[in-house]
Amino acid sequence: MQINIPEIPPAVAEAKTRFGIVGNAPALIGAISRAIQVAPIDLSVLVTGESGTGKEFFPQIIHNFSPRKHNRYIAVNCGAIPEGTIDSELFGHEKGSFTGAVAARKGYFEEADGGTLFLDEVAELPLTTQARLLRVLESGEFLKVGSSTVQKTNVRIVAATNVDMLEAVASGRFREDLYYRLSTVQISVPPLRDRGSDIMLLARKFARDFSERYSMPAISFSDEARALMLHYRWPGNVRQLKNVVEQLALFHPGTEIDRAVIEVSLPAAAMSYTPAPAATSANNKYEQEREALLNMLFGMQRELDAIRGELEELKQGSAAEVKSVDMPCSLVKYTEPTGGLLNFSAPAESDESQPMPTLEETERKSIRLALEKSGGRRREAARALNISERTLYRKIKEYGLD
Image (tube, rainbow, N blue to C red):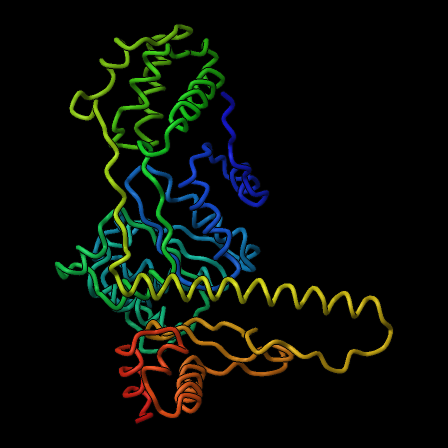
């Protein structure tokens, strides 16, 4: 029986080749597609997944498929920086601000201005640093350690964690407002045990790489060994698989690895694995609203790209000046939200010639327009904005629109 493998989109194939990603599991392809889809839109992204799954590839995909790709990309492991110096590392410090500060220093937010900053293990940030990070996300402003001068930065944040963030929020280890701010878009990287035949694709790649690097005969795997590897839990994910294959290649060069050798190399506690039912977010109102808004946003982006293409064709095909083009009212320009509410405004004729309205002005205008069109009926206005009534009430009070 012939197995039909779904065709991989060209952009996904390009990303896999560029970053050396191996595998065709639908969940993996879906995660890569989501990263490429959100890349052109300046939204904060939270990449989640177990340790060793390869989360570090996704911020690079987002950066390289975005308009920021020609600017700096900086990756920071928040869990590897001591609590006493994390603020200095991220935001910089002034000379003499603390013992050992013999000179002023730029932080990562200043160094990455115009580019992308990847915050790995973001759940390890201290609460005081979380408050500073929230300010940067909301206003683009920060203070160096030991300075009272407010500085501005234009940085896209992509964060990653292997921690259950909702549990961290519930236990008070992570700020709830920062979690929602970081997770405008979430990308879930699947564990290796749920990627099926990708396990053997990766194993053969690691065996080949090890053989070439150390000029040793490559190992292979018997049918029984492959069956065991496919049903092993792989708690360390891709990182663990790589280490196991390299050990096998070192001690059994040029041989066919059988089941007995595999059993010795793998901890028995994780030998049997039955995939658990995937957790759903159908009952999570916030997740539902976010997904609906994102789908709407992506659709509008595609429509706008199509209109731009048509305008370019008109300009090229006619010498006469195009004086006006009627744009569908559904085509809008996105600006990143403040407080979790997506904002939309009509596209300006020239982003360079006209100043952009502030996020607060755009949000207030959107809410006022929805209320006017609904005759003050808040439920109808909330439905038009595609947000909950609770969020609308909070925004009405915040902007004094009662």
